[in-house]
Structure formats: structure tokens, C-alpha cells
Length: 77
Image (cartoon, rainbow, N blue to C red; front, side, top):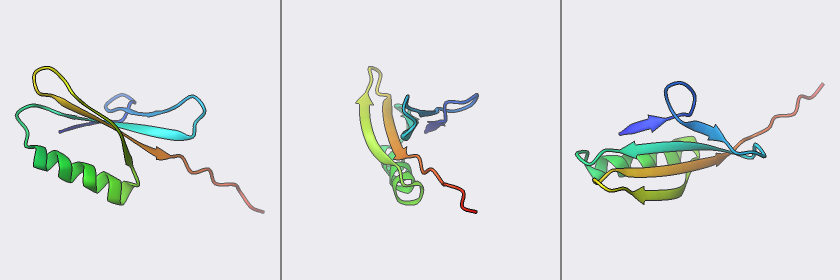
């Protein structure tokens, strides 16, 4: 399973209004879906990600888009 965080090596992006950041998980056709589900579950439980979209592409590749709200911390004096 490939995890992308849209910088140089992966795909983690933020939307235009900066309220959410997105994570794209790509699962190749030869990988087990049970492993992909376990990875998604770990991201949801420990990283507070939620599944936004999933796509099955031609050739059997699965893509999963996850998002989470960006927390803004205000400095106090």
C-alpha cells in the first residue's frame, strides 16, 4: 500500500480554506484488501482521519482519500 502526503514523497494536501488536510492511500491490485482495511482503520483510530472517497480503478487499483480537520492553536500570553 502506498501512502502519499503531497509533498515530495507522498500526498498530504490542504484544501483552499485550510480547514482540512487530505491523505491519499493507493492499494495496488496484488495487495490484500484486508491489509488495506487494517491500514485505513489505523489511520482512522490513531490519526483521526475519516474516509472521504474511495475509487476502484481499471486494473484493480484502489484509491482512498482520507481527511482530517486542521487544528489551529492560539498562543496565550
